[in-house]
Length: 322
Image 1 (spheres, one colour):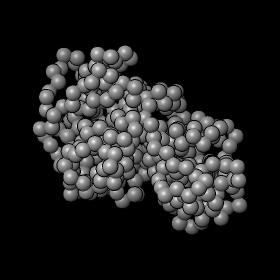
Image 2 (cartoon, helix red, strand yellow):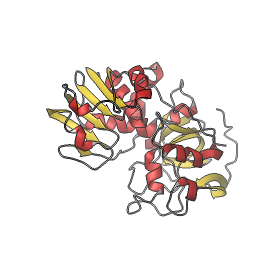
Image 3 (cartoon, helix red, strand yellow):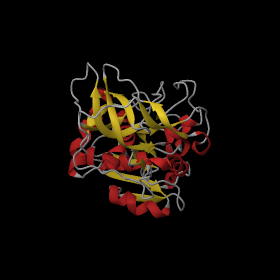
Image 4 (cartoon, helix red, strand yellow):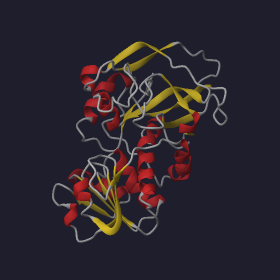
């Protein structure tokens, strides 16, 4: 997508904003006169082309993290893909015209930005961004950053490595679809098992799962096989610890936590996207977009309502953003 470098940057933009906490259908409003964010020295301004939404966006909108959140009004959105239109004075790597993507909040719950990605423009630290793989569309790229970085960080924290086995709880979700692929194709897992409902089992296998478990018909903790690592992406920690080997590890991203499992919050870093770029460009690791999308920018509130059903497969993407 070419954006002429001479194009003037407006002072106002369209953005989805909430000024109070609640469900998106009640509190999220389209503001056609929002202020374009200022660029700090280490940031670039992105003309947003696509964004994706995550459960953390909906939980944040409900006020579940307000003790550590930035004050409202808030433009939600962590994941972005777009084109650099302005660079701060200390930006070294990126330049105007670069097609980039990333998770715009370094610490997911520690004062995330008030100006998120569900807007025409967003300002982001250069360190959180990577150049978009050439083979991915903006919509595909926007689906990836938070979930692929979360999948990667969790695997790293458990010490996952080639030849180990893993069970993924919630294999068809945004994070789960990436854990399966990274475990198999990047880390070299010996066995990947994953849970989902009946209709999503074939998807799990297509992503690299050796064993697809239908949670509506069997309990994964009753399987005779135990795993080196269990990665819980749905919040079933009390059951997850029953499926791990004695010297194995359990990581969760959805509490409450039952020892010896541990929970972590993602630290966003563009270098992880750079590291995974060869796997994305070769097609070994793929974005997974929910077939109901992409949702146009005007239907962002409807996209949140769909996300809140917890039935989405992979990621819910907003595209195009005007």
